[in-house]
Image 1: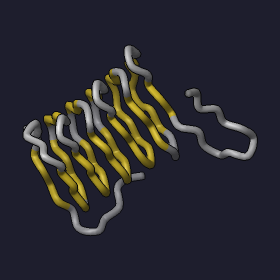
Image 2: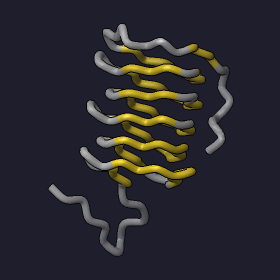
Image 3: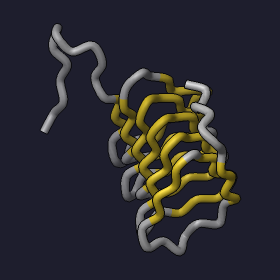
Length: 119
């Protein structure tokens, strides 16, 4: 399935496909970013999803974070959802944390109280 934006939509998802590699300073959007490939760089968006097989090496800043794949670096998020096969090193700073049957986290967890991320 392909995702297209029509004239009535204001924001379309940003997708880094499986097998793709993105190297750069920063990816920024007000919408959703889905990572199925590899990103070496910083990412800012409303919702960031690192899918199974996806990997980010850099800094993430988001309101909603879904980690199924791998993350190396710091992440500042409001709500973190970490799933079974996810792996992370670095620091995960969060307001709310949901972990589902995971033993792959080697990161430092830092709870914040009520302050929104730098969105």
